[in-house]
Amino acid sequence: MSVLFFHIYAEDLILDLEGFDVPDIAAAKEFAATIAKALARDQIKKGFLDLTRWVEVTDQANQILHIVTLADVISVITDNAVFPGSPGPNTARC
Image: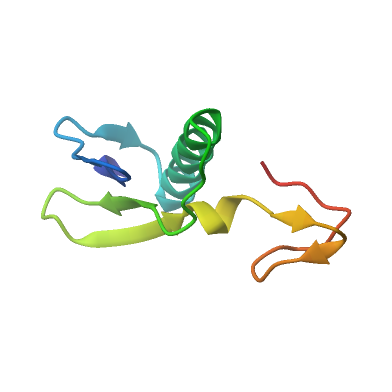
């Protein structure tokens, strides 16, 4: 493919100014999900989790190719209740 940029929208905006050379959009989506999971882990270590934060994948023309939110990559289960976006109580995605 080419160089894509992975911008992180968290407590602070972190713009990816260098980008990463990825082979295709599937690899870019997987990399964005990995970044989102790491962001979720960092937030949990700080004692909070903001599921509305996201990672945005753009091309060199700054066109948005993909967005992945923290809610897309984790499941929240409590008292046997499954929240929207979660696949079910017996599935872990983080």
